[in-house]
Image (tube, rainbow, N blue to C red; front, side, top):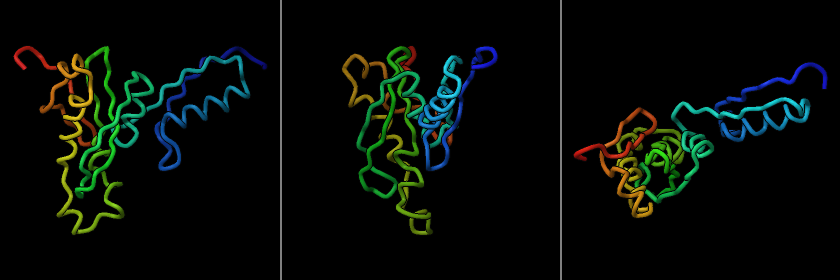
Amino acid sequence: MTGPVLHVLIAPDCYGDSLTAVQAADAIATGWGSSRPDDVLISAPQSDGGPGFVGVLASRVGGLRTATVRGPLADDVTAEWVFDDASATAYVECAQACGLALLGGPPTVDTAIQAHSWSATRSMRAPSASSSASAAARVPTGAARWSTRSAVCPPPGPGS
């Protein structure tokens, strides 16, 4: 290798439907490392909160779990979620429970009328039902801070 050792931050988002952010970061690191094996690589996959959000968090904090929930058109779907033991916080990716990809094709007038997001709230209840008893005591089962794409369930505060 020529030149100084570089410190390289690898922080991609997903590559559409071809690679998740974690897969993209791994591929970039593999390619870079094969050309410059002495460089220091820091992998930090990114997510905008949409599809891939849970995978990125799981790559950083671990605790990837699954729950079966009702999809946007009433079919059961498997949704992944993350529980971070250190902060006692459950992370839910709403797109896995009620996202457009679960409609079985492009949105139509019928699917717009029939679809629901009830499963997103069910996903937030799933961590309590699926966790150990000690973890379940720290995860709220109803209220959550919402964004348009994902939900973060903070640990209950005083009086919760």
